[in-house]
Length: 115
Image (cartoon, rainbow, N blue to C red; front, side, top):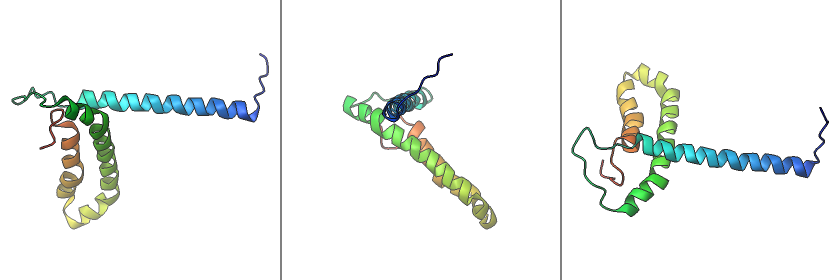
């Protein structure tokens, strides 16, 4: 097997390209997750999307940000859970931090910001 010696600029270029590919793949996963978890309205009366611009903004910006907020809220809940258990308000804290943000992220139609 031949020895390959890379100079520092070549090595940094390879690492930079790998980071770009990683960021693109992560963005695609988040966008596809937004489509996957978006409520199709099958359980209740579905209303058509009134404005395509709202739906596009919802998929491109609001869903990924609210998904990240759900993950962050869950992280905060894990940290404060022992203290809320001592106070006896674990369920209320979970509902306020995690469920409310999660419902906004995953339990509404595209472009519907009223829930």
